[in-house]
Image (cartoon, rainbow, N blue to C red; front, top):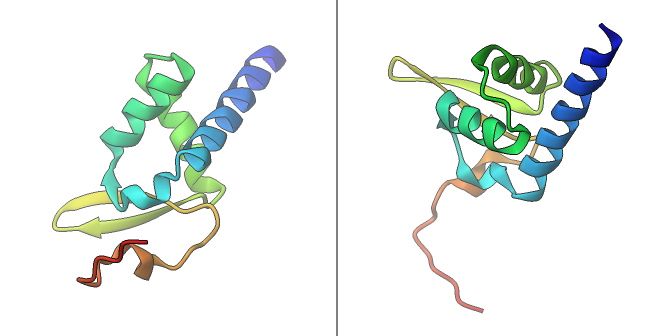
Length: 96
């Protein structure tokens, strides 16, 4: 049992690090299937139960926000509790 827990914990940390590194916050609110595909890609795990367990670990540790939109649940990866106003377009394009 201990060996499985170490494997699970390592996968959870790898997923968190990857999503944080890739700035997944800027994807905005997306359905579960997007995160499922990413977690599967990162860990190499194809079993839905293990993927959902890793995803739930992210939810429990409050790295994700959950929102209901028109009969659908969408999630936002937000580990740093950034302001969601950043995601809303303001109509201006600024080139530097």
